Length: 353
Image 1 (tube, rainbow, N blue to C red):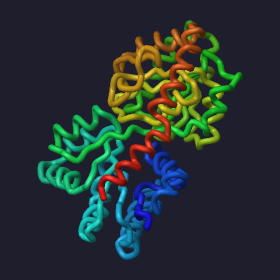
Image 2 (tube, helix red, strand yellow):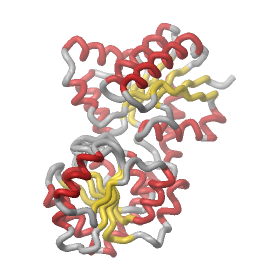
Image 3 (tube, rainbow, N blue to C red):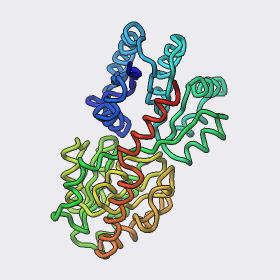
Image 4 (cartoon, rainbow, N blue to C red):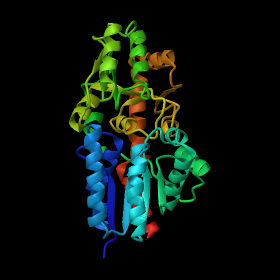
């Protein structure tokens, strides 16, 4: 009889972000579904606070009374409310005598933890230690979790990318060296304001510069800054991009840029690499584990001049971009493909029983 696994997390269809993408890829993996009896349970969806509250409450109630017949509960968890909501799922599963895997996402998890009062910090540690396995997205995160929380149950699985879905962007002939793409929620944490300021510098040297910013978040604030600096011809705020829109944008650009202040292992960077794009990003989270000199350019978060210099380099050195493109496709194939991620996950499923 197959091991029964319930994957719990944000709805793959009604939520945005990397966590929903990871869950969708697990749900659609033929080998995992052939090996295990695997179901996905949406515990959260995007929306206003009232919608989120009601949806989360009724999702948990339905889970509690109808989802007791699984062997493993693979729970995807981020910081803030996500941690405390998922705590109820963990307690229920352990009360039923089941195995629990906690898969930690969220770029600011340690900042969230340190912002809590001591009593709540202890609850977070108890929650993590009660799981049979905690999955970290990088070696750096695992070290932080082990050191801060005293974990002995933490393993690393990097996010993986479905190469087939992005192959057409690798072979695109419509891209331009002067076109840059930023993917993800816009705001200070993602360095969105820094990117606009860097674009102002770059536009003085690269006259056909195009910076495409695809994401939700502080879109109106970013647009006001663009207009204040009279950069409407160079920088476009496009709103949230579904997969097909994102694929079309990747076909247009030569470089994915993510000048973040906090990250884990962002899907935007891995998707850009899989699409054969150069990457400009920062020395935060697990990014330095992935981006080396041969894969792109790393700068210190907040260094606008360095960001502008990297963008100018990408705009003017076509030979370097071609070399990076080849290196990035190979690196995803060898280290960060969806197949590699799911093989690691399969071993964890087997080991916790």
